[in-house]
Image (cartoon, rainbow over the protein chains, first blue to last red):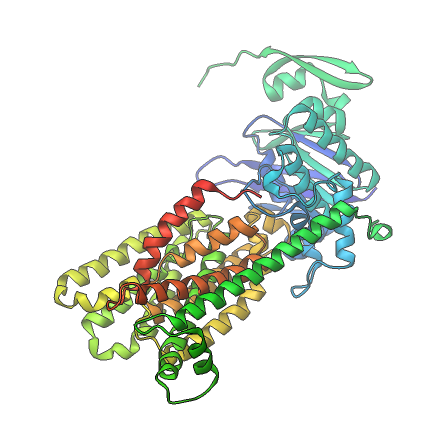
Length: 266
Length: 345
């Protein structure tokens, strides 16, 4: 398998404070679903923002499909990779379809409008995200889960080969969370889209991701398949909790039992 | 992947598409009709009321009649100047509300009014002998203030919040300078007041000729920036992820908005409210898509200024009220009403 995304020795931080991300290496294979987990402030969202070009690393380099990300124009990068961000509710009064059509922008010349074959891609993106029925509704008239799916449809209209997601399920109820994760699984499996996802829910990470990278204080501390990773030590060290691990049809599930008593030595 | 499924739309979907098309078409049609109605009102009303027939003949037949003089030399240029100014201000406001993602943004927020105002007041009070240069001074003042606001807000990018804060600071500074100038020269304030509140009094063909090229350039440029604005309203991150060069796009839109609003206020004075209320109303009615939102806002802006100016000069005869004051007096309550009611569709 070839590498979709490679990050070497990324560093990010502000002056006069500890680095938010340091010595960060990552390799994502084409077609893989990678989860990034870690406690609050571990730098996982910052890593994702650097991968998505929304933040520039102070050191290190990122390659997508063998090309240096810093050398690509904003448009060529957007033709290959996009990200579904965490919250994007600006009270926009446009229809779902109009939103999704904007996803074609990286593939349009500056004078081009979204027409003809581009509209076909829009149709496809709406269908792939089960938004056909709602495509003529205003974003204002959608529920949280529907709105998230509308934005995902816009991402898919970009026809990306790499999809980054920053805690996409945070504000959704459990049914909508699962619905979205299943949707992303079908995009990952059927379309071969490489997925890199930051997520909080470790059981969901274990259920859906091929591989998990755990971060703490800006560094990668563990990585491996869910089965390799889910041990009581892992939860103690990375998250500071006592947890019991069960296996559900070969998928590890953790149950938290309490917080590890913290040392107070300043 | 998508080629095989070009048209799978159901009748219901087709109906929805059709409904949207009809809505957009009727929005343009209705706004154009309102513009015509307002213009007709502008031709008919004034110190001397003219019937429709007289207006018609004086518009289309050269003659020496009094009606022809009134319509052709007084009312027509005034209506057209007001229309252009209203269009410029509304386009400017529509763009700024988008790039700031703030419904309360208007041309004043980036210093256009305070910069143009200070420059104009300086000319009127300190250099009245150079009054001919007032439009160009006001225009440059507006442009200068906007550039200062932009530069002050730059910190690896100019975020909407920092732009707004820098705008507030620059506005209060320039506003203070303007007030100081007026207090120190209180005997000359009388001449400044109509300009300060925005007035079309005495505007005629030369003013129209001055404003027209600016409007044309601005309108053409705005066609090229609609797509950028449509991406920017999605948020900086989303626009960047769609391959848009966000900072460049925002700078161009701010420059265009300043150019348009600066041109308008240099000719008609500080007409407020149009740039705020018109785009806001239009958005409530037809939504955020700039390809339809912008043209309808422009037509709406022209309509509002023509109607308000006609009312301002004919309701209070023999006094000519500055149009800006009437706009605020009538517009503010209407705006509040809209905000409270919302529009359901």
